Image 1 (cartoon, helix red, strand yellow):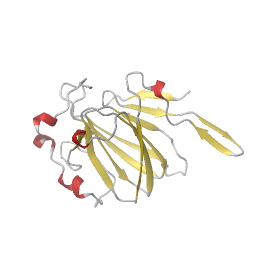
Image 2 (image 1 turned 120 degrees about the vertical axis):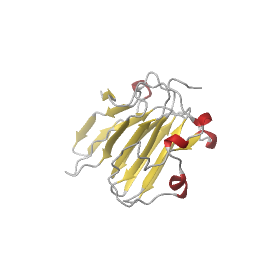
Image 3 (image 1 turned 90 degrees about the vertical axis):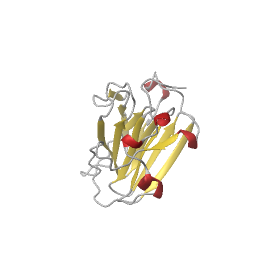
Length: 188
């Protein structure tokens, strides 16, 4: 059985440490199971991103969509920031490294991210990230927050990142249009 730990920093974020089964052939890991997240919805779409060392993706957030991230190759630094009005952890930032460790091992942890929590990652090495989402891609639900917003106070581990045009133009938290401000507990 995996160990599933609720974040003590951001409400609703869960970190999964899966069980690993090894033998002479290699290993087997169950990276995701629906029943691990009783309050979550069914994941309906799987995505994969490959990034070269030095990239930052995000911060992005959704009003209605949850994500589950897993890094099978390389190392990434995940940055989460709670944007949800009414959340007991509104304004909190959490940083979690996923994937390969400096000692050559791999932690194989996954992370569940609820709606309204801004999320991004820095590729500390060349890396692959897979993520499951509980609703189909909807560009009207895809929002952004400036990766370098001083209120986020995140150490991305990269001094001069490679960023998409979109991520260069994301607004600061104080500039988010009220209609796109996430609220704690809102799901449709």
